[in-house]
Length: 253
Image 1 (cartoon, rainbow, N blue to C red):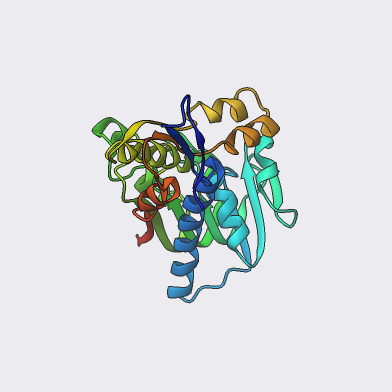
Image 2 (image 1 turned 120 degrees about the vertical axis):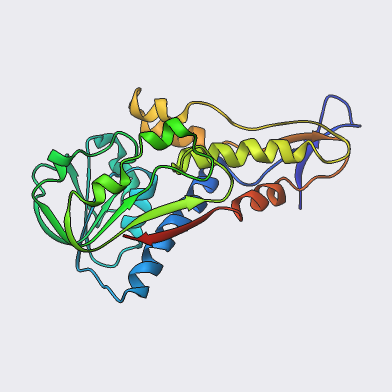
């Protein structure tokens, strides 16, 4: 059943997606983590120990999908709430040097440095490529995925690529905002639609500047798409059409 209410008059209806912003984030994160698990299965590797650098959406999703001893390192301790209780959390990476079966770097643009990665070795090393199919030349110049892949001594390495909707980067929040932006534009193409809106605000400032995880999560529970229309409209279907376009894969080095 479509979730809606009447507008200023009964002639106009307001339709709300059952998708919350957080639902879109979870879908995109699951696409990324599934790509990692599928590749590990393809190369017949079953890590017993894993170090993931970055505890934001991608890192947390990968940590939750692995069936082994997982440690997640991040310079932002306020992101610890994204991880399961069985995941070890470490603030910073300097005390984690040594050998790991699996190492995953999800820190993206301006992330970990060569000094921070120095002294870490791994059987498998994966770097999340921060660029996507809509990245401009300036963003691509800041991409150091290839350089990072050479920083760690590993037997097998590859980069995680996420693409499909022309987003400027592969960041989960970038993709989430792009899904909502495209969904608003798609809704306007329907006959009888007056306007479309979405919960678009600077979510990351709440978490990384205000350091307020509870308010961050509350804001992510807002409807992802709201449409004012004279005719019935399926907001969820519009969102799903954009989500289905997002793909992830590991490109072996």
